Length: 217
Image 1 (cartoon, one colour):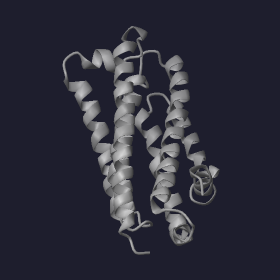
Image 2 (tube, one colour):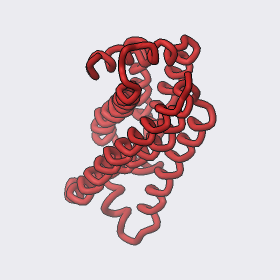
Image 3 (cartoon, helix red, strand yellow):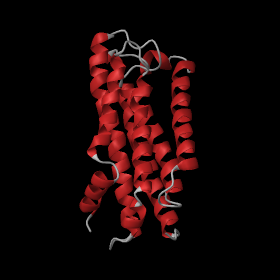
């Protein structure tokens, strides 16, 4: 079974397109000064509900019966989780463009929806993945404690990033603004966040494969 077929199976049976409707919740960010971070956090709700339903339907038993290596099952799950995260992020990016026109002075609560913000979110996504997915694959179907820990880790990393912007002298004036003149350092943060997301998710994949190989379903 190819990776494309496996991702299709995950998209139809585990996280069907209806769950991408959670991306529409980013429209709440059209409310004046609604914190941007809340708009991207709904991905956790989509994933936890979808994976809980998959567990109830014994998707893990079905998946392990397929003529495919366990490492590929892990790859498929990582790809679908990454897709949910990036769809949520892309939806908020579109909303952030509209918000920037509505509120040229920026958000009064939290960081503005600029490239630096999305870089910090990508970093938090990567940390979420490396905490949640290897833990999830110690059983292959339970969310529980690892989901809670991953949610806490996501929040801690993002809050730490936002606090650093607020507390480091001069950082707020460069990274918490919609001024196009500050686009270069903001884009640098975005690139670094994207690299961190890719690196942490790749590390999560390696740890998950190792954990799942030891599971006796």
